[in-house]
Length: 376
Length: 149
Figure 1 (cartoon, rainbow over the protein chains, first blue to last red):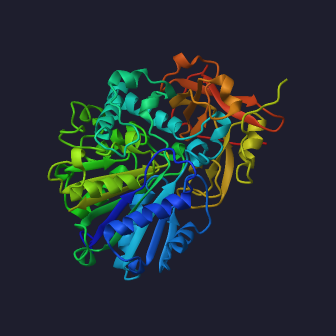
Figure 2: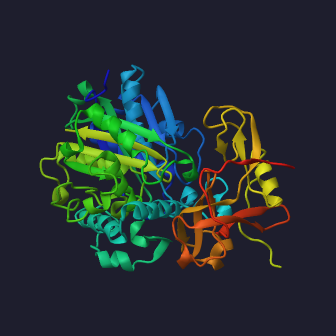
Figure 3: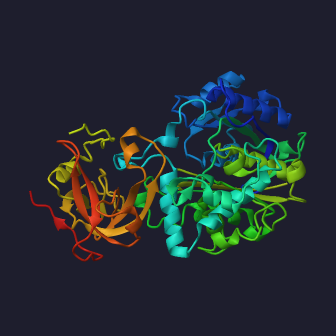
């Protein structure tokens, strides 16, 4: 039976973002968890599940168990999960599944990392033997995907720039965003190359920070202090471990993940009021919007033009400034932003009467994907 | 001669035949003995899960599928090469490899351009398969040859 609307996010919070000297991954994760638990108003003695994402800065054995112990929680289920950038939305999904299975009642899903002040970890690592050819980090892989998209569909660098400019407009309305000074397409075009055809302003920030949510049953949610944000739909897809193993580079797991989530939610992209689409690089939301069916395949570049995703646009996207301008963290902050939009807490950047939010997270070089459809 | 200071491949048992062939300047991939699927080194066939395979020689020709030019300094061994290309080449036989394109300026790279393998002997033990613009025409759907020796 479908889990549609049976589970809800009842607490959501994030720490400060940016360069946080003296921070630790554990410290940021537990701070985010504490803030989310406080936001929910639930007593921590009710929490019987701790789910976390591995810090990118390095592998930590039994990480979730360590987090649980620091929080004074003795969980029935504890797990750290690695779906790269897609992980945080999968944590919410596994929490809902675990509650539905009768194993637990309430979960805290939390994530913190400090790649700026600590080790850069996977940000500069390589996969398989590709380091022998000089392939490091994420930008080069996304650059090769971008070039294919340009080749197959005529997508332009200026269209990529629209994503950067639009998310910055949103960030200028968000006091907690790292980059708030508006930019122009010319700024984008003039920014230095990182991995051609990607400019610096095509690449997301690298940030220290943490974010967390609390998930429980819809029934329990209705007696808590925050308006519940229901999980209407969820999906995932994990398509390959290496770029070379994929039949095509211009479609990623978003298509199947989105299909699953929209089918479960029984809505279409037209019903979405606000979208939080993982923007590690500017090509990513362009392809995700296509894969989700907001527009046709290959039409993503044109779709984002004309103010459509900006403040006041038809599809408000990445209303906190996204990974490009708010925080480069691995996506939990996008879920937090979706919750805040649906609760109407967003002040200057609030999307009027937002009822349905779509969240897309993805990771690796578009290897992993997860989707949440949320409603108030 | 200055010491080679770029990262070297980690040669696992699964990958040893690939790198042994490279050392002889032969590009060799694994072919499943049950379903015939070609693959980069792996203990198992991704298509039918057979663990029986043979190493077969590729024609060494293919097309440039995509590439990037790296401007960011990630590793000191590549610092002097910036901007350098990293490419994915699709072989005539189908599989794709991460590699570099040599013998051609970065400005002349084009998706679909015909390339052929060239081995760079970087140490006594390791030869990296790289590619250069092809002399002979490239085809598609070429059948792999069983490796001799």
